[in-house]
Length: 244
Image 1: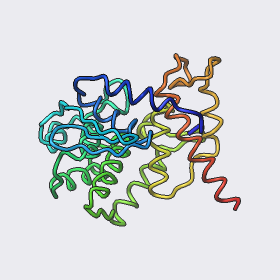
Image 2 (image 1 turned 180 degrees about the vertical axis):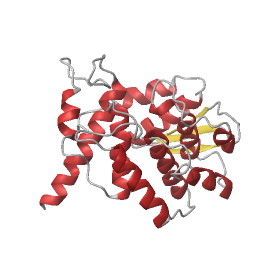
Image 3 (image 1 turned 90 degrees about the vertical axis):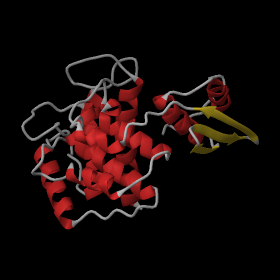
Image 4 (image 1 turned 90 degrees about the horizontal axis):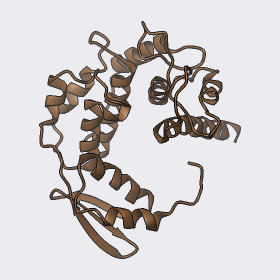
């Protein structure tokens, strides 16, 4: 996003030195390889790639829990250390890796998360939309009904503040994670972000240049930097397009 030089060769060498990737390792290795311009495919339990003419493959340890079970256990509102470590995140990662089949049950369970009559929070709403987007990229057309769009829009408006987004309509705490989720939902349903969102993101930058996740303080992390820069990058791109 910063258009800076990336040590792609060193990153590829690092990945090549592993004997096996665990689940998260496989997912993020694939992301790194794609950013480096490699051809990547997950097939037969292994990650295969071609980088600068060199072919390699790495065995991966991927959970075999049926994807639909993540919904049946109702874990989608329970987050680990971040938005990227929830049970819904595991569903998204496995779909993007391409090793799991897609069926109507998975689609319907994901759509159910967008139903306002169910328990709903901004994180699970965002992850549900990301899962549907990943399913569509797997050649399974997804068309959100006007009912879903209307209720998502209404829900997001109730989570919107002057500077960002709260986790749910009853919360008063605006965080970087909830604002990242809200911003991305707003992109889907084409609702403008709060006018103070950039000022809020700016207020989270620490003296060392990195970003923290809350206005109440905290250390800089790469994840917070990614979330903050993603929002800034999107808004800057939109402003550039609107001026053309």
